[in-house]
Length: 115
Image (cartoon, rainbow, N blue to C red):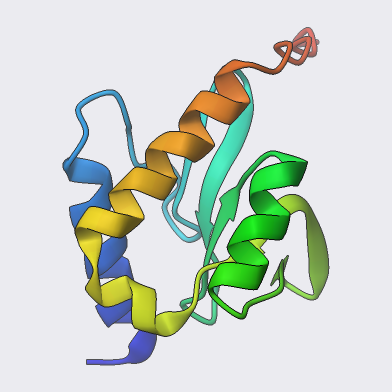
């Protein structure tokens, strides 16, 4: 089993722990609510969570981590979840819920009209 497959299984289990979350994306798994993504698993099997500015700074300090990148791009408001944390679904679930609550507090993005 590759790192990506292992982390995808963890991501799927994590999302399934909370009925208000839905795993989206076929090749790039993510969760979204209120027209905003809030969790993302990139092609390297790295998990990113979207948090408020204050929570980002605390998370980076507490878990000795950094910003999150996907396909070489810095993801605004995202932090990189350390690999060690992937073994603690209860703790991860707490942060995933915080991430969800954060995007629910943001104004919804206007949808583009289909042509």
